[in-house]
Image (cartoon, rainbow, N blue to C red):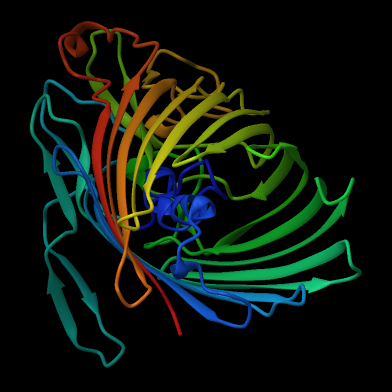
Amino acid sequence: MQLKPVAKGVRRQLIAASCALLGATAARSQEANTASADGGPGDWMVDFALAYYKENSGRITALEPVVNVHKDYGDGKATSFNLTYDSLSGSSPNGAVPSAAPQTFASPSGTSLSAAPQTYTTSSGQVEVVNAPIYSIAPGALPMDPNYHDQRLALGGSWQLPLSRLTRATLGGDLSYEHDFFSTSLNAGIAHDFNQKNTTLAFGVNGEFDSVKPIGGTPVPGSDYALFEKTGGTSKNGAGALLGITQVLTRHWLAEFNLSVDRFTGYLNDPYKIVSVVDSSGNTTGYLYEKRPDARTRKSAYLENRLAWNRASLGLSARYMTDDWGVHSDTAQLHLRWWDPEHDRYLEPTVRWYRQTAADFYTRWLSSSASQIVTAASADERLGAFHALTYGLKYGADLDDGSELSIRLEYYQQSPDNRIPGPGALQGLNLYPGLKAVLLQVGWRFGL
């Protein structure tokens, strides 16, 4: 089963926001480190990280190893390759609201809500009888698929080439494979230094091409869940651009500002999410498959300031994002680093604050009295209004062989906003449970 968030190419939101720290945050933290683990021109450097991620209430658990290999040739040329594998399991909310009565749902491969065994004939003509792939939810409990699992393998690479003494180009690409999803992306960028190399102007573009093949078929958006109307595989495509400037302000102060835009079209739904239909008494009368618009355009602005002095450095960043789905988000992050040169070790606390508004079509449930055709609707909590805080602490030290070992612990807490009380029987039920998660990451950096 695939988890499809809205933040990065309609892929996993929490894992992108947490486990992606293996690459982005670990790499960012190396900038202030001048230890021997950084290597020199001509050396192959290896960054290995292993992350363990766990959500509360029996929800998602993930294990993700990441390997990045980088070589700087010293003449403006550089090459890097990365390999990522993640395995997820646990329970995943399906979008339905809790109910005062028991509820029954089908797993993605199911074709009926009946508990009766299903009979089918194999290609060899043999008749097989299997238990129906359904699961039941107790009264008052949040509907979650207890059989959630997902595995992903991703490969990527990039090449930096000098075009002149002050200009360089970068080309890259990524492949990502899951049993119900395949993604290909390409990117290209150019950067130019001027003002005695105190200013860098960069521009980049990227394209993504995804093939979506949900387990059991692709649900017809907005159709009756009980009818299991499904078709074959589908696709979505996206393109984006980024314009950025980096400025050295003083010997101890560096600032970066980026503007970006991207647009995705095609099948942007999560094929495993549904929306409850509720009557005026709060009783669930049915379910619909979610239905999102088939296009989305996002725009964002990012500003970061980095300062360094003596044994400490500081990074402060802010990001604003808006899209045509009605989602607006604000992000602020602060990280500090204290470096102990005598013992070749450092300590880095981090705090991150995030807030977003709900998508225009987000709804916790649909009213059974509505007579109009649903043009767009989703109960996915990742499209709702919420705010979140992440607290983290990282410790790193150089080893005697010149490598670096690090460990990071982070705690994430997400709280929903704009909670609307449910009618009748829904009153008193926890319709907006929020989320808590812990991330533990161990990293090792060494040269070959």
